[in-house]
Length: 278
Image (tube, rainbow, N blue to C red; front, top):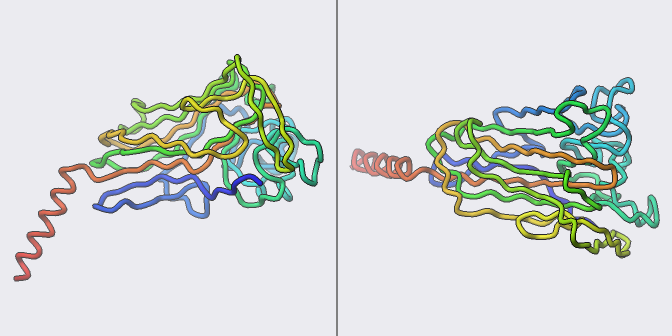
């Protein structure tokens, strides 16, 4: 069974100990979330299917069945995850025996994740299928120390399928950190479905030098040492051209620590207070 993972998060620290602000879970403590490159209305739940899930809830104004861009969970996507694209949902045990592609288990009702399937489609002409989503939070005077994210992918990808995580520490004027995923069209990979069957597909997705599988894997980028001069911005950019390739991620975490001067000032303030109490 695929690992159930709770939420996207960003860690912000203005004191000596880090604090955690969560998004995509039960609480959203980011100052703002924005998106671009999506032609049709987006209400915060993923662009999925034919408009009955995630978009306006009325009328056929959404994407075609099997296409997806955005964050959701199996419950929000429909009963027992039935609204998720077939290439995202692993139904090999009960729903569709013989299913040979999928990431999220058919028995999973809670996992919050961000998925991309075929963003290059007739209903999303904006940006030629490339779309991005950003999360923003204050943090001036701190340092971005590390970034981690749980990522999964399954399918016969092409060179046009690309995904990227960016971090800005000046409010979005520049992005000094980027981590990209791209297809390796010279190799194949063997994936394990929930029923234990094996599925071999060509051209897997590579992220940070590793082959992605249909189980979420944690990747950590440490020692970034990025001084924050404005807002902290986490940006995800995705382009997918095909309904049989699925890319998903969750639990993106930015660790923010106090800048040395701030930490020293906190220490001096505590020392001064202690002296006044004597």
